[in-house]
Length: 127
Image: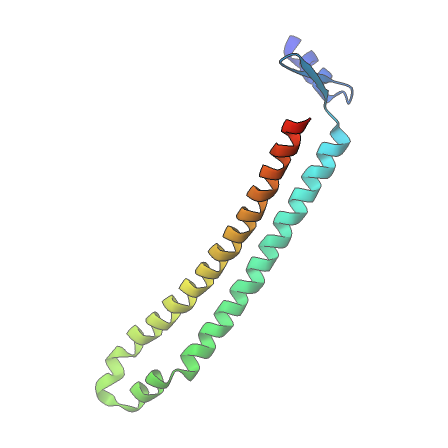
């Protein structure tokens, strides 16, 4: 029963959370807005990744279709057995390129966030 009353207090917009000697008010409106904003950012990132993955698949199909080595191999009876291996190489190369592009993009975003965080730490220390 005591635990339920704590939950009711926590649900109250005026609930005060103590941190050391400081008190901070939990603003549920701002938490909800922040949560919604983060959700929207994640959703946009997910949709961007889906589009990029679709582009990667289209580029992979195009690479397979237009690969000069595959075209030559299809015309030669002795190289027919290596066609599947060549297709696998092309797919792996395209997926690797896509993964490397994502890693590069995320690294840039991480660096920017770290720089912003460092600036905020400096500003916070001044206060």
